[in-house]
Amino acid sequence: MSEFNIKVTQTTSGKEIILAVEGDYSVSSVLEVLAENLHLKDRFVLATKENKILNPDMTLEEAEIKENQELLLIPDPTGG
Image (cartoon, rainbow, N blue to C red; front, side, top):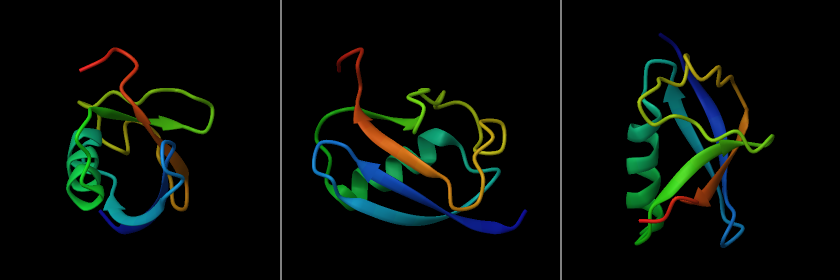
């Protein structure tokens, strides 16, 4: 599986981060890396620009995330 970049925008701060990922990475593992790097205290979810929330149990490949795709890091709408 080859590596590719995705861009994630944290909607609460406007911060953008470029991550090198692989298709077999889980959405939850990407969230863990983001939480660590951005020092997040609350629960967040990843969503596409079309506001489709990604299932944390899916891989990026299963979620059809592609090279240079932009994702949104948003507060978990279901609460903590």
